[in-house]
Amino acid sequence: MTDAITEEKIKNAARVIFTQKGYASAKMRDIATLAGVNLALVNYYFRSKDNIFKIIMREKMYKIFGMIFPYMQDENTTLEEKITKISEIYIDMLSEDPNLPIFVFGEIQKEPENFTSMLPITSANIKEMSIAKQFSQYDTGISPVHFMLNFLGMTIFPFIAMPLLEKIKVDSSENLKLLIKERKKMIPIWMKNMFNNDNYKK
Image (cartoon, rainbow, N blue to C red; front, side):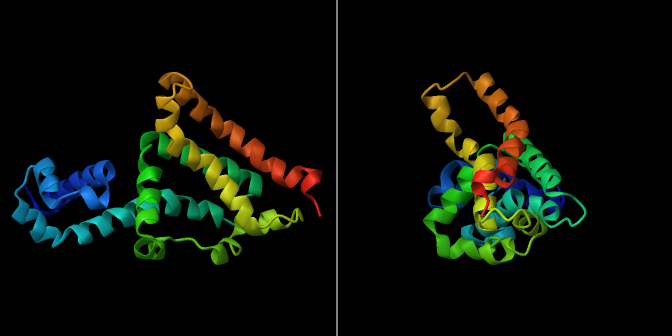
C-alpha cells in the first residue's frame, strides 16, 4: 500500500469517526481501528488528533461553503440563474451527505474561536459578491446578508432538522426525501419572491 493510499484511508476513517462522535469524543485509536492500521501509523501521518481534525474540518467547510462560491461570484449569470443553480448544488450535495451541516455547525458552535477563521465567507465579502450586488439592484430595502441567510437557511436547515423530522414521524423516510428533492424547485420560487414582491420595496 502506497503512502498516498494509506494516508487517504486514514483520512476516510477520520471523516467517519469525527462525523459520528465529534471532536471531543473521537480518539486516534478509533480512527486507526476503522482504517485497519496501527495507532503509530496514524500518528506518523498526522501527528495529533487536532491536526487531522483541522484537515477534515477544512474539507467539510469548503464542501458546505466553498463549492457555491464560483456561482455566487459569477458575473455572467443572472440572479435567478444563480439561485436555481446553487439550490440544485446544495440539495444534491447534502442529500448525499446529510450529516455534513450538523457536523460543521455543531463543531463551530462548540469552539467558535477555533473554526470561524476557516469560514470562507463574512458579512463584509457577502456584500461584494455578484449575487449580493444583483440582489441590491432590486432596491428592496433588505440587506444582502438577510437575503443570503434566508437562502442558506432554506437549503441547509432541512438537513439539520432531518433527524427530528424522522424521529417525530412527520412523514415516511421516502416522502421526506421527496420533500427535499422538491425544494430544488421551491427554493428559487420563494427566493425570487423576496425581490419581486412589492411589500418588500422601499
